[in-house]
Image (tube, rainbow, N blue to C red):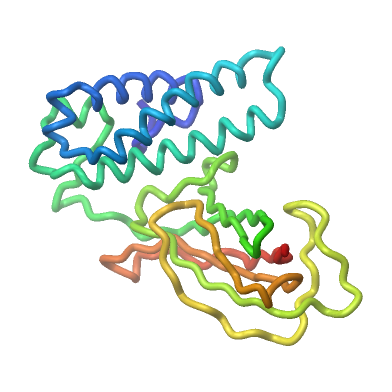
Length: 238
């Protein structure tokens, strides 16, 4: 098994998810781990979707860009839900067998988390309805949202400003950002327990430019939190 909870390769993750799903849905484990009905229902829905999307993404006849993108998004959702389930499980309930099956490594008092030295790779996706989806990605995996293994949450702050006159909208993610107009004040810092989250803006922000920066935060010892990311901007859609 790879370092961290989830294997980086999709084929290995597919095997892992199959084993974990069967383990968590075992009636004895379901009661012992105190998994909520809503989390269990969501996990079942994700499993059905994964069993459809993953094979399609591996078949050259069906592996369109849309299928692959949807598979990557679904995998990120599955990982976030499993992290929530693991975090909610009483640590006293976990046996050595549980930890080996779920790939949950127990930290000892003599093994504190190291300082985080890397910054998130931030991807913005403007959506209709004054929404900006934010994806934070670790350096080791630029294909899907994921949190740094040694952070507790994602810390972020953003500002919204008028776009400088005559500046065109950015054509695609990764392209040069528009030039912001008059400086705006930062909002935050705010916290997210997930690597992907959505910022809902006001109706009056339509057409403006949102600029964001994020970092991996250690909530126990802030001196071990990572550096702030490069600032990334996106136009707010109506």
